[in-house]
Length: 199
Image 1 (cartoon, helix red, strand yellow):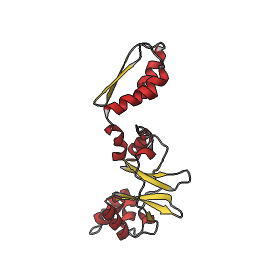
Image 2 (cartoon, helix red, strand yellow):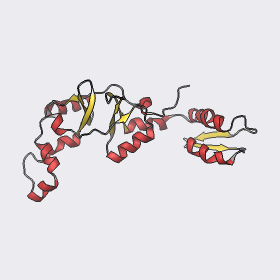
Image 3 (cartoon, helix red, strand yellow):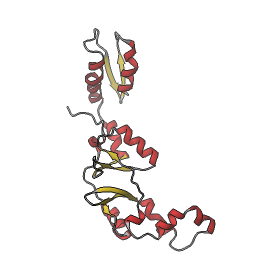
Image 4 (cartoon, helix red, strand yellow):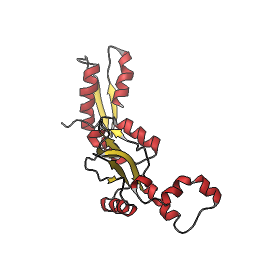
């Protein structure tokens, strides 16, 4: 039986398209369209992630193409105005890049995405080199598992460790992804731990 996905390396995409810091605006747009992605990691040297260029970084060029904003708006949107005149990935990218390590938990990756308001994160190794990309959709793969797989994992990894050889044993059922544990346990202080691990 395959193990359930718990860390980023279990669900991330390993084949990733990226650009170098000197990539032109046009090259970035073409690469995004060709690979049907909305953001690209920007790499330096041997593949170290130094930033990310997203569609949001590219839009100011179109937004300010045929008109100049009022002075007050210019002051409020200096960053966007700078990006409107940018011609390379280095000038366009958001830096430092919000990244995640391959051994991070799915919950850690989800929190990083929510905090940074991004849809995907470059996955890096210990040296900061690009190892993959994880998206919101990747993180949701954990919910695509069948009830039987979830039941087996809870029996093996939670009930089997917290309540070994229980008599009567703790019963585990899962229906539509909702797990229920029933039974008597010798140490009630372990119940909250079982609940948290099951969740």
